[in-house]
Every structure is written in structure tokens, then in C-alpha cells.
Length: 236
Image (cartoon, rainbow, N blue to C red):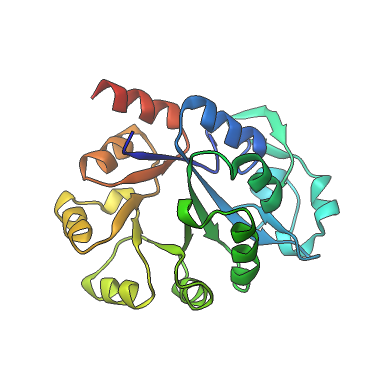
């Protein structure tokens, strides 16, 4: 399959996001990619967690950086749609032990400034360079990553991209543009591809946006329900 179906924080419509349970469910559905988010704990361990605060998926207060790994392990990550399905916060290294050897494409989003070097070191230890896009909404974080490791692939997350943004992207060594799905237009995607950029959509809130992202010519998308995307792709 040439289209990359990234299980977004795993199959996060069905399992607690950014947990081993969610990642494995995404692979069982047939996803050929995984997207996840990296933050650092109070005691310096990289873990997989999206939000700035813990409340939405754990019920706890504060942020990842306020807790040690041991303290975070005591929390349960809940899937809002299926509250009986829970798991624990996963470290980046645990994730790599389970998935780095698999034939997948990875999108690893930097959520905190200052984690670039530590993330690169761990990804490099597991031989992830050729199959990973390091992504961020923060252009300074991507510039820092490029300065540290200019041969790694970078993806820039944004609502949309202007022509000036494309110049900045080239200067920063970015190879993938990641626009929000609702802003997509097929002609813009063609222009970005012709300029040498891969295009991955995010913000797939429903199946209408899911289909729109494919029909506009993207190379892949992050999706919470990879089973529905894969079923539709097979039917096309």
C-alpha cells in the first residue's frame, strides 16, 4: 500500500491514546504507520503523551513535567469512548522496543522545547532514521533538530502553509508539510509535491475529512480510526 495510514496515537478512537494497547490495536487493523508524541518527565525520562496537562485522559492535575516516571506509572490512561479500556503511560524506549523493528513509518512529534537531542539519541540507538519523520508545530524545535542532525527527516505541523512558509521549510531542512485536513485543496497539494515536499494531513475528525485528505492527493494521514480508512481505501 503506497498510502501511509498513521494510527494517530495508536487506534485512539478505540483504545487509550499513546499506549501500547492503542498502538497494537492500530497495527492489528492494518495501519502501516504510527504517530505519537514525546514529552519529558520531572526525572528526565521521555514518555509518550499528547496534552499539556494530564486531566483529559488520566484525571490527574498538572503536566508530565510535574511528575516522575514512577508517579506517572500509578495513573491510568482512559479511552473516553470506551472507559473500561485503560493502560499506563508508555516510555519512548518501551515503544521502540516493541515497534522499532517492524516495517512501519513513524511520525514522532516533539511536544516540549529542549527534548530534541535526547529524542534523537534514543531514536538513533534503535535505528529509526530511515523510517521516521520528526515533527512539530514549533519551527524553532525543527530548526534545532536540523542543526543537531541534518540528515533526519522533518515534518512541519500547521493549519496551512503560505509560499513564505515553504521558503522557511526549505531553509530548515523540512521535507514534509502537515496541514490540517479541513484546509486542504488538491491544487495546493500538487504544488507542494512538485516543490519536493511530502504531504501528510492531520485533524481527521470524521470520515468526510478522511476521504478529502486522500482525494486531495496527500501521501498519508494521521487517523484515530485506521480501520475505517483502510476499509474505504480497499473499496476505491
